[in-house]
Image 1 (spheres, rainbow, N blue to C red):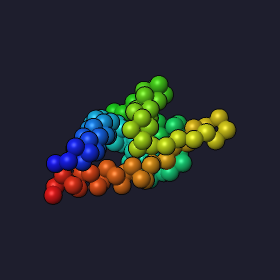
Image 2: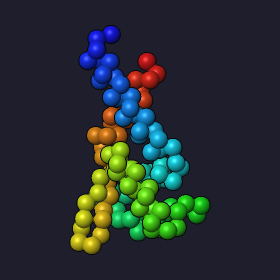
Image 3: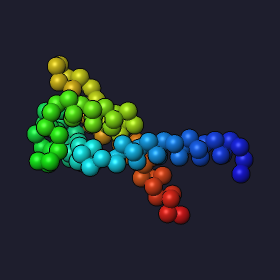
Length: 104
């Protein structure tokens, strides 16, 4: 295998591992599912619609949202005093592609 191909593959593997780590928490998966179904929602909406066994503190939710933003699965923007969230469709497509390549 050519060195540049190996470097690209390693970079993709590192990125995939980081995404998988972010998705290793069921609360973050629930957040991602909620934002997929409710684009441009705000943090308080997410908090209210998480399962009963999910986080109930805004600070805990903020940590989960930060982890999803850090791996670029979620994008955020300010709308006045509210922070709105949406799924990064390109990153989700990349994740699907990388996971699909594991089965080939």
